[in-house]
Length: 186
Image (cartoon, rainbow, N blue to C red; front, side, top):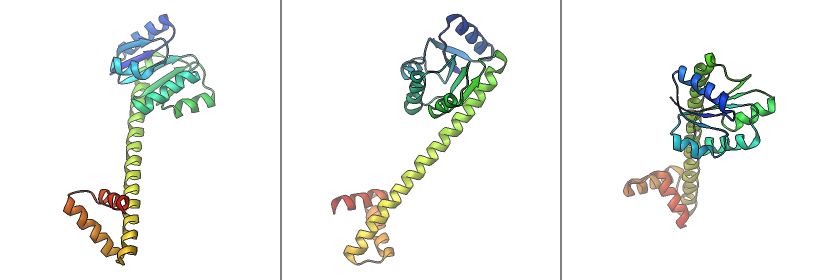
């Protein structure tokens, strides 16, 4: 597991990196802050981001939000403080695990593994949601096209659907594509 470590204190970062290595992780880069996180993750080709931050500020959380949007990876935050608003903001930014009271070498590996599993589950849910939204959008387009065909050609709903399906088969395209083109061309 390739880890990008974010820690502003060099001495603590060295100790955390040693703890991560002892836990079976490979620390591929250490950064003093979460700024430009996307570029750092790409450059280091990190699988997981571990942040040992006393107080994750707005800039760090915004960088994590951008990472979650553009280059999704599991992010684990070990923080000194855990105000409810701060934890909520971190979760909204895509943080997979937020651990208060700092980083302990004995619990690093289990926390990272839980964060990875939570991240994967979240990504799977997100993919299913996107798929469902796309399916719904396709159905809306098909229903609109059927409605227009029914009105303009005085067809039954079943006949309008058959016509759209035949057009799709004749062109070797998806039904939603044909319906979209039909609506665009009317």
